[in-house]
Every structure is written in structure tokens, then in C-alpha cells.
Image (cartoon, rainbow over all chains, first blue to last red; front, side):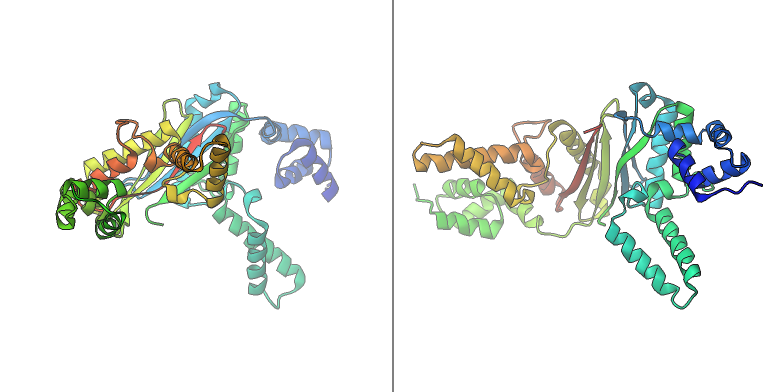
Amino acid sequence: MAEITAQAVKDLREKTGAGLLDCKKALAEAQGNEEAAITILRKKGAASAAKKADRVTKEGLIESYIHVGGKVGVMIEVNCETDFVGRNDEFKAFCKDVCLQIAAANPTYVSREEVPETELAKEREIASAQVLGKPPAAVQKIVEGKLEKYYSTMCLLDQPFVKLPEKTVKEVLTEKISKMGENIQVRRFTRYQLGA
Amino acid sequence: MAEITAQAVKDLREKTGAGLLDCKKALAEAQGNEEAAITILRKKGAASAAKKADRVTKEGLIESYIHVGGKVGVMIEVNCETDFVGRNDEFKAFCKDVCLQIAAANPTYVSREEVPETELAKEREIASAQVLGKPPAAVQKIVEGKLEKYYSTMCLLDQPFVKLPEKTVKEVLTEKISKMGENIQVRRFTRYQLGA
């Protein structure tokens, strides 16, 4: 079996914009052949979705959800490229699902890129303190694992999708992008909890 | 006719919490008699509403409004004292009206107290520059007038109530407080405009 170097994975990521794990898997499947790996990614929709993720979004929907009793409310803006997709029922359903997700799972940020550096440093420090005394190699792994856990709690896109918890919100979003053929972005959200 | 001193107006305001103009009018109507003026204010509901405005609110409703087409959305939190009022139809209708108000009139702040001092200084400077050369006494009046205009554009409570523009939102709110017998506060709002 061909050896998959970190550099090869990095190159493939840059070319396709697909996720790290997807690139690794595709390269392994393609026995290290980049062209073949790209084709594999394209077939999966991961590459094309990622490429679409660079395109400008300025259409879309404002959607809201008020939980029964009026104690919790969510409002979101989801952007897409054309008004045509903005009026699409599947797009609307996705916006509604994201509202429910935010109401239920209470994220703080849309994506991990939004987490302030100071917040990350604090999380890293806490995680490091918890694994004090373990071998350095293990420590780094554990700390990164704890950070991933933090992202999957605090960041909407990294959260397990409430309606289908084996996928993350980001994975569901990527599927929608592939299916609808347009870049789609959750631009912002606000969540109110009565008196909080 | 009895002379109404500024001190008398100030005293009445402190006792009742009613507005400056209401106190002046009530004192004039009562020929300077404070007790009678308080009764007049109470009858109008202005005094009692103001007193209620000090009471703690932690119940209420989260309400939202998405304008047809999903390009503008509003979410608000309105607080009251008891869940009983929170579930009252008139309270709910008021919350809906405030959402529509915010969608239509696009305020930036809930009340004038929220306007940052730097923002006010800037508005004052612009207004002063516009009336350069007029007599100082006139200038102050004009500047204050322009600031009032600014408040009535930027601050929800100072805006003309869209459904009944001869009243401000605050006046309508005060009526609701008097009628429902509980302090009611618009705690916060968010307004999204697609792509803005």
C-alpha cells in the first residue's frame, strides 16, 4: 500500500478544499494517486461542496423559532447564492432545522473560527492541567481531543445535528450544498432565553 | 392662577415618577396643590405606571416576526412580573406590535439611556455646527430639539408607534402597564436584514 504523506494530504486539501479526514481516506483509496483521489472526493460531493463554499452568498432567509411557551427563541440568517434557492422548500426546511438545533443545543459560535484566541488558550490550559503528569506525546493528543469536544459543544457547525446525531451540522450543510449546487452559509444567529 | 415653580414640578416628579410635562400639566390643573396634582396623575395612570416601572420583571415572552419573503426578521424579549400577564392575550398582542414596530422603524436602541455618550456628543456637535451664528439661547433650544429628533428615530421607546403614530411606543407601553397592573419592559431586541 502506498504511503500517504502529510504533504500529499495538505496538497489535496488545498486543491479541493475537502476535509482532512476525507483527503486522507481518498488518497488511501487511490493508493496515493492525487488525480484519482480528487475524483473520489468529487464523487462524494465533498470537493465540489468545498469549492462552492468560496462563492459569494447574499441571498437567503431570515428564519426564527419560538419554543412553546415563549421562553426560548432563536433567529438566524442563512445565506445562499440565488433567490431561487432561498425560496426552495428544502432550503427553508434546513433553516428551520438549524433554528431547532440552536434552541436545543445552545451553541455560542457559528464556527470554530469564531472562537476568540483567549478562549481557546483558556480551554487549552484547563485541558493541560487535567492531564498533568502524563507523557508529553499523550498530553498533546488528549488536549486536542478535549478541544474537539469543546468545539462540538460550543460551535453550531461542529455540533451533532440534533435530528440525526451521527452527523455534524456541518456535514448536513455540506450535503445541502452538494445537493442544491450553491454555497450556503449560516451567517449569524441570536438565541434568547427569558431572563438569562 | 397659581405660579408653578420648577421646584414644585421636581418634587412632584420624585414623588410620582411621572414625566416632566405630565407633572407640569397636573400642577397647573390643580392650581399648584400637590395632593390634587398627584390625584390627577394617578387618575391618568401616569403616576402608578411609573411606580410600577421600578418593580422586578423576570417573566414575559420571547416573540419574533419574519417579514414576508424572509428578508427582515425581528426577535424581542419583553418582560413582565408574573407568568399570568406573560400569557395574557393583550400582552402577547403588544409584543407582536413591538416586533412589527422594530421591523418597520428599525431602531438601534431600546431607550435613550442606551445611547453611548460618544454618539450623543457627536450628534450634539453636528447639530451645533448646523446652527452656527444664531443667538446662544436659540442654539441650545435648537440643539435639544435635534437631539429629541435623534432619539425619536433611533430609540424604540421614543419612536412614534407605527400603528398609532400620535403616541410614542413608550406611551403605549405606559398604558399597558397601567391597564395590566404590572411593570412591563422591552428588555432587548435583534433585527436582521438579509445581507446587511
